[in-house]
Length: 150
Image (cartoon, rainbow, N blue to C red; front, side):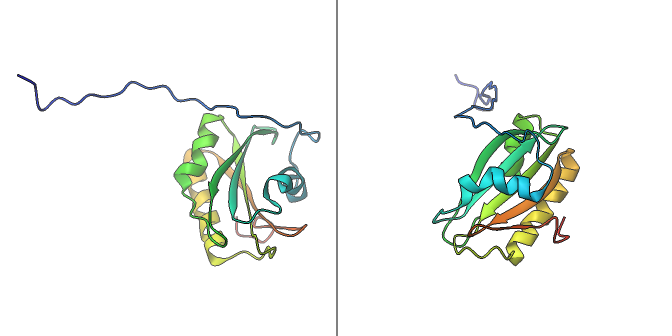
C-alpha cells in the first residue's frame, strides 16, 4: 500500500551556462556611455523589445550578459525574479539593465520607470545594487540613473 501523504522531492543543482563570450576592451563600465557601447550591438535594430541584464563584479567589470526577456513591438513584461536570477548565479556585486525601443525613441515610459524602481528595491533587499537602466534607440541612449529615477 502506497503512502499517499508522501511527496517526491527532486534534488537539484543550479548553474549558469556560458553560451558564448565577447571581448570587452574597456574592462570596466564607468559611465552610461560605456554601457551603451557594450550593449548597442545586442539591442539596436531589433524589431521587438529585448531586456538585458549585465552583471558586474566589485570593480564594475562585466561578468555576464543575459537576454532576460524578449517582448512584443512595444512591450516587455519584466519580473525582478528573472532579472536577479543571473545576478545571483554570477555572484554579482551589482547589475545594469538595458532594453531597446524598436521605435527608436529613447524616452522612458511610465512602465520603464516603475520597473526600474522595483528592480532597485529588489536589488537593495538582496544586496545587489542596480547601477543604471539604459534605454537604447536609433544610435542613442537614455540613462534612467542620469534622469534621477534610481
